[in-house]
Image 1 (cartoon, rainbow, N blue to C red):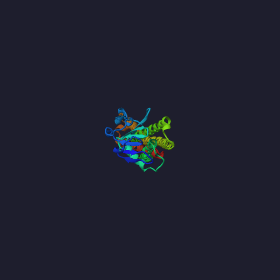
Image 2 (image 1 turned 60 degrees about the vertical axis):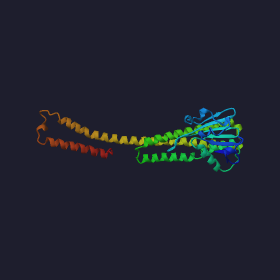
Image 3 (image 1 turned 90 degrees about the vertical axis):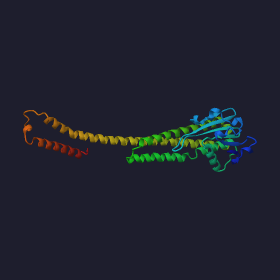
Image 4 (image 1 turned 120 degrees about the vertical axis):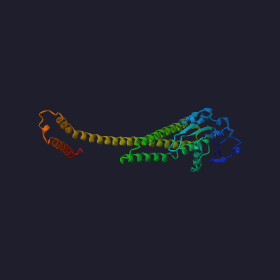
Length: 303
């Protein structure tokens, strides 16, 4: 798709472009060969290897600015990538996964404002890129809350696997927000002279949003750690209960072991050895000892 940059973006056909001025292009990698773009708008060959992009990175050259964006995977969605090239008043978005196309649609749906240059469009693109992130953060919080409720309800069969997945997502999301913030900061510090007042204002807003997202992601990481601590506490409580029961059973069985060892000696002069009621008497003694121990533990609230 090609757009003419003005107060609003206007779709334009490729054949209708006679001069590369105030033009934005959203193309897939396979469309580059037939696009006949100016050389300055073509990203280097090493940048076109989409599978090698693992982070958000900005490259400042003498006559243009290039950016790589790695958007981490979400549940039921693989990681996505965007490459952009800003040259004079033209923009190219290399869009293998459809991200840039979605962002441009969001830009078109935004409230009209003074946006008449490539700098304004790029700032609006960044804003559109993070527009739905607060809702995504909210979903992560709800998933952590669900795990916390499962811990409180003692339903922790798959807790470790689910928490591991959540923590991985949170780490990736936090890294993504931090990298995107660093990218926009680099743009502000090194290319501020290319931004008009409206773009500067939009960039400041994007930076505030990214700061907020970084803080929320960090808060969720702490929340996830607290839930993990609650789970560990539940595990410790369960282990303590098991150890308590084993200790009580061991304590009850100790007198029985003493009785068994005592009457298992079979010395010649043991009076109970030839007593007709010796065996029932030992049974009664053992039952009395066990009953007395159980009563004692119950009175001490140890059972």
